[in-house]
Image (cartoon, rainbow, N blue to C red; front, side, top):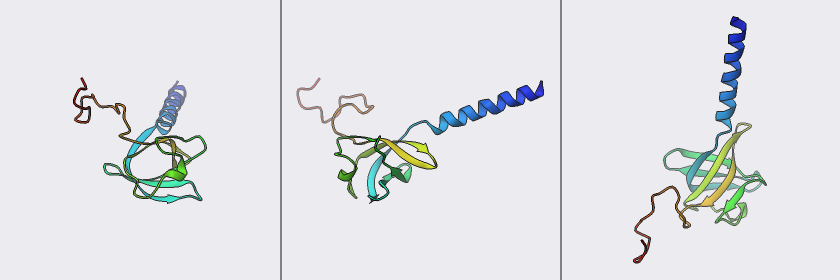
Length: 116
């Protein structure tokens, strides 16, 4: 009976660890360096610090014309990343502030004079 309880606890803890490892995380900030050979870049998020991000052929780019369009000093870059084999891999990279409502309630100062 104790063996079954122990095995159940072990399986549950492993499944939680796998779910946590595959959860996506979002960073936003300024590109501080680019390694074209390794297809990585560093992004400095003012709240979380600087991380190295790997770009793959599955990475989706929005409002940025691909990995080659990234440049050092580029601001307002958002990266949605997942942890894979000990590194952060980008699932999506985009420029923020390109329109739309990125989680805000709308009604900002840039809505224009006749916007309701």
